[in-house]
Amino acid sequence: MSAFDGLPKALRTLCVRDGRALQDIAQASRISPAMLSSYLTGRESPTLKTLDKLLDGLKLRLEDLAGALEEVQGHGRRRTARSAKEDLVLGHPRPEVEKFFVEQLAKLGLVPRRKAKKPASPRPKPRKPDKA
Image 1 (cartoon, rainbow, N blue to C red):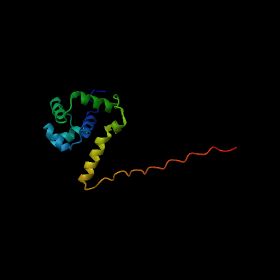
Image 2: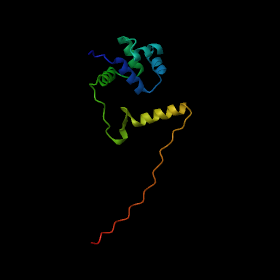
Image 3: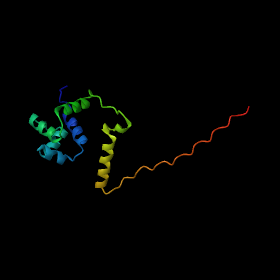
């Protein structure tokens, strides 16, 4: 197994985590959207120079790519949630995922429903001791 096995999937993972449209990522990376697509699908392999441009466009370091490759190859461990605030959804912090979905719904002209607050349940009455 090569260190770069799974490169297309690792690049896709990094692009999804970025949250921007692929066209925006391609523009920031100074590569064509068609070439970015071919790298993400595995039809083409980026040169080291192109890989550097792509990481620069994603504002990531080589270490981030290495981590994504390890994750894809099954060697890496996903970061576990440290607290309720850092609850993860598919490996991403829940607030980021929720924000992304709300933005996507807004683009479609839909408004997300808010969770209804549960009414406070009345306190149970204290039980009287049984007389035996």
